[in-house]
Length: 101
Length: 246
Image (cartoon, rainbow over all chains, first blue to last red; front, side):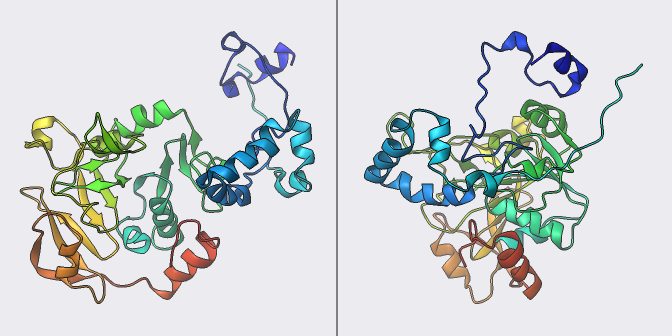
């Protein structure tokens, strides 16, 4: 990301580069949680998680299948067909900001 | 419980909302008699107008259309500690005779039977909200005479009043349970039975409380939820029954 993009809209910057060591570009990286403006929470998963997390055997099986058993996020997404279509955010864009003085 | 709590909110009030039943109650109030309720969530959404019942305090539905989004520290410092929150909701594993709340530990602190999630923002809400409403289900274990650990202050903490402790808010004015409403005695601060749900006797309420509960001479009846409240709760606010049981 060019610094000019960041500097164009400073009111919305929450974490400036001086406090950052590295940035990982990982689309859908917050799944099953949400990322505002990108995708919604996968609430069906949260409901299922209740059962998974209560049972050590099911939890272990889940971790093997979706955490330890997958090389990266792309493989994780491939294991969830239809997910991106189901959860992608609809647009609600606000007008630009005038930083003139 | 959600409907009874919703009725406690007046239109235009500023409410510090948590997830769970208070979230349902606040959004029910907003959909009925209090469309101008100002909802503040500790995630930083101020004046939230969620289109759907938010499933967590991080729900982007709280951000879209809100008055402002600030940091959590600002919610506590600029709004709560500044006396801007009129109503705060609290719950907990234990609520005692004086409305003190325990969300820290059951049993001895060093050797707990159950380790609970802790205060979160509850202690500050209990101290600073101008009044608080507590929601908890009656059960003698949930309503002991004295909490095992005092996380959030009620009306008397280890024998000292809120005034002596310098707590600015009025404290827990009402405790909304699944069978009745308890209110703090205006002088002593002790929780008293003041209203019962339809078909509930004072003795049933006492069976769920671990101290000799005093009942007000004239008990009020709590009206059951109306058809519109039930429809909103079941069909609009929580159709998946994430929070509702019945």
